Image 1 (cartoon, one colour):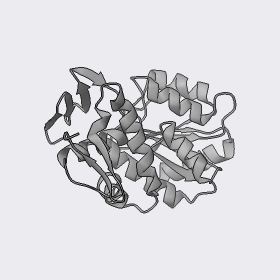
Image 2: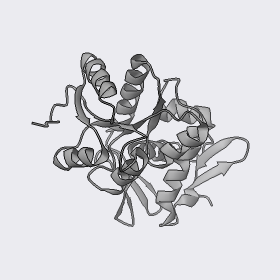
Image 3: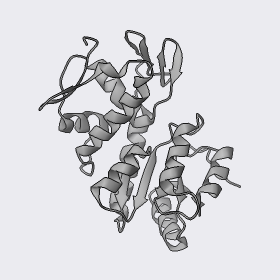
Image 4: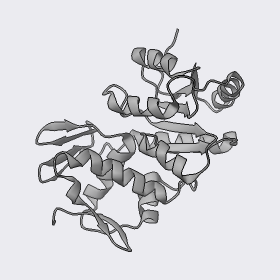
Length: 236
């Protein structure tokens, strides 16, 4: 039976149509202490996640039928799965394709062929980021509120759906308002000290965060400081 209840060992759903790659990932990730579950295509993955939500999804870009990019978009649009961290597995190494994957909702990407050590490092980094902060704060900026314990963002008491990386990015901005941070500083503070993320990734997540805030006219709080980086400010 498909069971993702253990929290001692994070549950990873591998969505990959190549059986040999699934087998390799099952062995390597299992040896690293993860509970691994497999799906050969998007429909099978959706069926599994309709029963139980994993801690992280490893998602191949080139899937038969519904592509990995389309599935990532679907997962981000469904309340039950919109916070699940996603790492894209892709043979497409060009920057444009990496950005497309991130804009579809992925939190990170790994280009094939990859080393299992690098992949495990990325999985652990994304899982650490997805845990979020539990310091009990409720942060406010005008009509915008962020509850760290409930992992909830509201605007005028209306829930705002954010992915895990956007939530952490907004939390960092709101706890460091009025300060300007470069892309590299944001990477260190929000993504942590793993070296695989490119600075361009920050711009993608800033766009995703602004897009979520735009409907409520709160995107103006995330300000671009030309030549320096970004800041969060209620002073528009």
